[in-house]
Image (cartoon, rainbow, N blue to C red; front, top):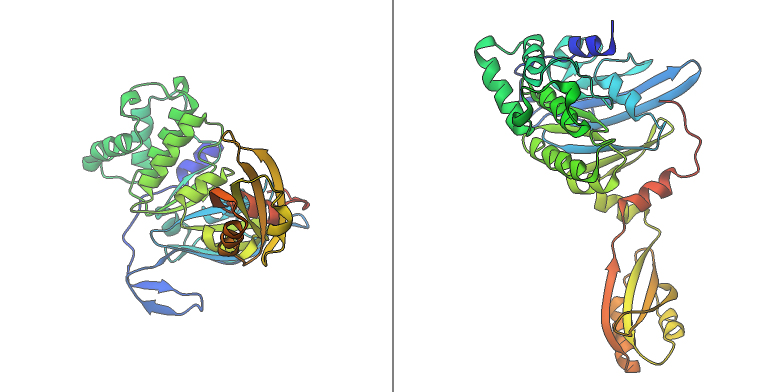
Length: 351
């Protein structure tokens, strides 16, 4: 049995699920209009005597778009394969829309669409033939199948290649055909493993835009190495390393929590050397000159202590000294910086 055959067998149509039941972090069933689409509790996977994923726990709410980040070998793909039923965990539990992936695997799979890193397609089939085949496998009624395929083709912007042989398409088009397949049957949860890997910059932008549209009325669990993409698309971020969860939250919270300092950029007109005066200001750790701007202003990078904002004191000092301020801006903390701080220089495990 090939990987594509297994993938074909394990992705199904989405059935109705009671929207009034959900499980909170304490494990108590409560009434509400929102539910968790993914519930993971102490999920663990060993390869031999080495843990690829170790006691991982997290929740993803209905309608969220969540970024799942980690360096190569951190355990991202292993976690996704367990969530989708491709791998059995060594221990722990995972639920999709309330269905345990081990105890109720078919019901759990009916609720999700999965796009692996290597998009599984029959390359000798035409796009429309492949989606019709997938629609039958997923249980889309014959009376609704043609309309459902047309909707997925339009949503993923591949209507113009519906009669083309898949193997003759560019990688970007093949990726969108894979996304169209994940949408068939209207699953409420999409699990996407590196959906933009190997695409050119224009294709990355197109795919990102498509994921944003998809996420407007679905839950999306997204793995990617393009951190800027996560900042634009995701409401929350999970960062894992060596098979364990090391950080979670929205981008702003993570940057505020883990950033060691902030940087100010100043453009000043002055014949003086302002570094010594600025470094005497509370909250300023270091001032570094970076030459001059095209207009002749001094460009200074001011490193601020964590949690401090000395901009008003800097402005007061500039005014008192008679310097001319052309620009002062706070450089944003990037998710890339936080990711590197949390994951660099660590031994990686196979995943």
